[in-house]
Image (cartoon, rainbow, N blue to C red; front, top):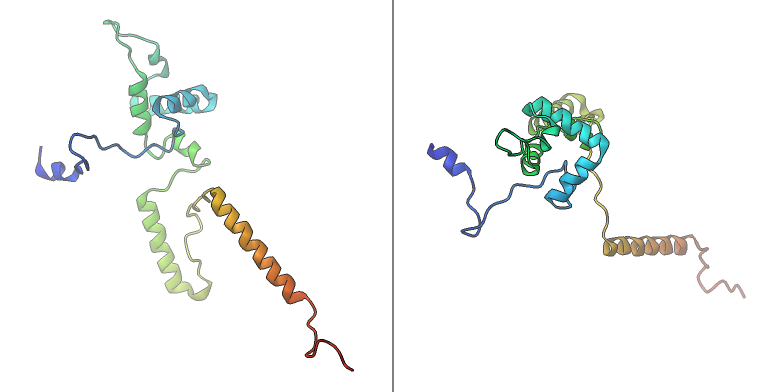
Length: 177
């Protein structure tokens, strides 16, 4: 093993612990086994998974129930989970999880940034700020505390608007006598 490859793997923060890979976006975050079982329970997702297994690994989903000549399973749930995590961005599961569009790679984002720079340099003020095909970030759901702060701020703004729209009395309180 060359030293460059050994240095590329980060050391765990605490000796004796295992550094975990980032969780997959294709499997709901309910826990590994439960998420995988939920994926298998959904007919459309199971069909996509079966297509991906065949396309990328030459395996059949029915191998979960088949055994070899020594009585071992041809495909275990763990083996299936590892394969799902390693599916590339153009897999049917990844495309379905991204609303039917292939997820953008780092290269795609960099090329879109270069396109936007060129458009601004040559288009002036009318140039778009970013590439029209660039995926928009999804809005994060608000926490209850943040939603309450937002509603309070809206109420204050409305009160200020209401006060500004009230007719102003002339100096002296409106008495002309």
